[in-house]
Image (cartoon, rainbow, N blue to C red; front, side):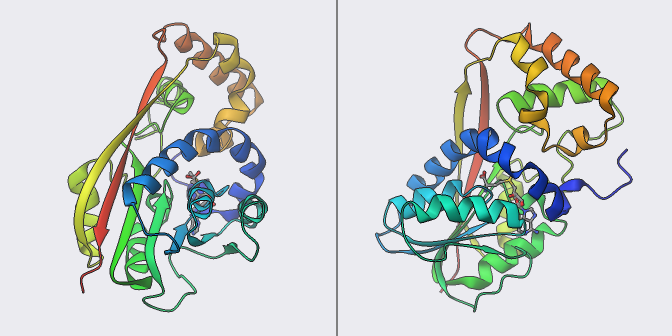
Length: 269
Ligand SMILES: C[S@@+](CC[C@H](N)C(=O)[O-])C[C@H]1O[C@@H](n2cnc3c(N)ncnc32)[C@H](O)[C@@H]1O
């Protein structure tokens, strides 16, 4: 099951899940995006790039705060959603279809470049970090958010546990080659790109646990983006949803706490 290239490297995969992603996953990621935006504390009017913008979580936070922001994503479906959300705040083209490993922007054109749960998914994450560094002006800020838990966040953590139980040959629930899920790993990636690490901030939120049936009934909505889900047939999907529901019965009353690492680094100069 791990021999094929993961679906996360295919823009068509993200196109096919974009509506569900905007309705479900983005509700979680936007809280971390908002935290990353606030931690960056940029001046009003800063030129901001959001790499792998998805449904525009960081892009929207930046535009709301007066930044001159643009988001890119290799999935046209995601870009359409991000552009529609951005247009409600500011006019103009604010989301573009582009590969984060080959940015179509001149060097030194942004004050800050963010990637929220994006660059670590690329087939070549080092190319993503290097491109963020290239388009930053000297002194500019790079901000990269990754999941600390290899299963992702919120309900996805529980679905990932179910996947591990049913498919123990899968090395990590998230199929990234490098997760960067420790401060030293993030710092090393920044340095490899010629950036100077500034800080890595852990950011945690607790998700109220949905009722057990929710995991059974909403497995596709909540986890359909995952390459694990994509590889299952209908019977396996039903078994997988049942496994998740069984695990959910043991969730603590307060819910699922998930931590993101928000790494920051500066371009020398
Ligand atoms: C987990 S989502 C994160 C989206 C958004 N930043 C958020 O926080 O909700 C990952 C995004 O990375 C995009 N992506 C994956 N590989 C990419 C690449 N090589 N270039 C640009 N975008 C890419 C996907 O289309 C998807 O929208």
